[in-house]
Image (cartoon, rainbow, N blue to C red; front, side):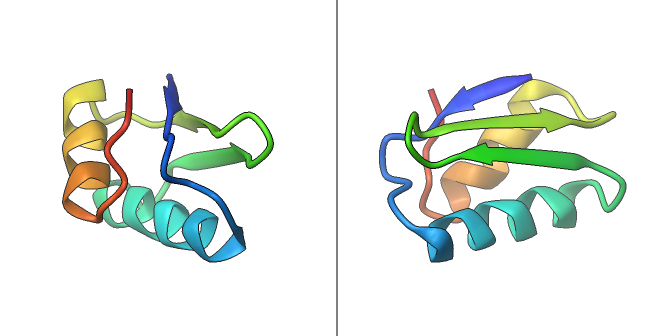
Length: 62
């Protein structure tokens, strides 16, 4: 699944986002493209769960 995260702007943001997804699913694979503000997640969790976790961490996803 892919998310656009407009507030993601630096390596620290990417780190927090990766950590947040891994808390929801420790086996998740996270790929981040800072330039396009896109995050690709391979997980067994549903999209809503991941999006909610990101929003709670301060990075609402679209």
